[in-house]
Length: 28
Image 1: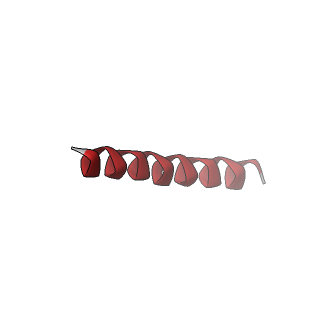
Image 2: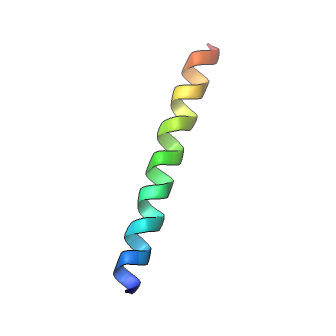
């Protein structure tokens, strides 16, 4: 169960970074 939680958090961080980079690139 702990591994799934860690994977879920990691996935959220990756997705968040992806959208953040996309948003910044759109502004430029």
